[in-house]
Length: 112
Length: 111
Image (cartoon, rainbow over the protein chains, first blue to last red):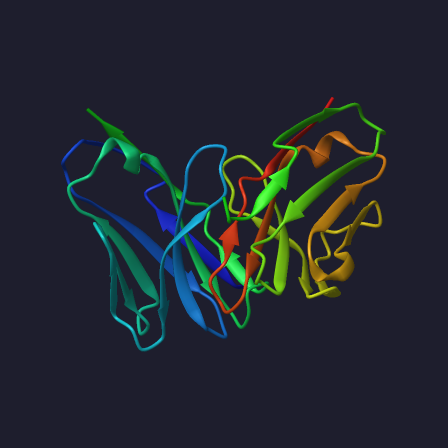
């Protein structure tokens, strides 16, 4: 069964600290892996998109990694800010934009 | 604002009523998608348009749901005879190549 599992389900850290979110997937065929940030009551916003051949991709303080052999990805957030409080969703694309397998997300709370 | 626009932002309706949502995609995007999202879950794909053609529909899209994209521009999603289980956030997204841009969604509450 195609699925994406994320951990932890929720995470609370202090402002300024770093954190890493995990994503494991069993999806075939694999086209690319995406990380989205979703603020409460808003639509998801794309952070990174990685294809099979990419190991790392950065977007400001966000760095995503992909290990296609173990089918694992991580999203590392450096020097967290209060505005980073959101849900972070890992998504694997099978072939096209309508064939996306979404994780349930990690709810991140940054405390001052 | 040149992003994806959805209206209304919130809709409260009584069970059995019909509702219609509108999505205005980014102007040069030829692909438009509708998703449904419930609390604590990722979005679920509903349907997809390339220009004005509806190319894919999820099994989740019962016969009470219909979507249109006349002239390949804005799109509407209509739910007939709403049920309490239809309560969710309805998200629209558009794309040109690969990257999806989402609107802020329409939050539907069916009483």
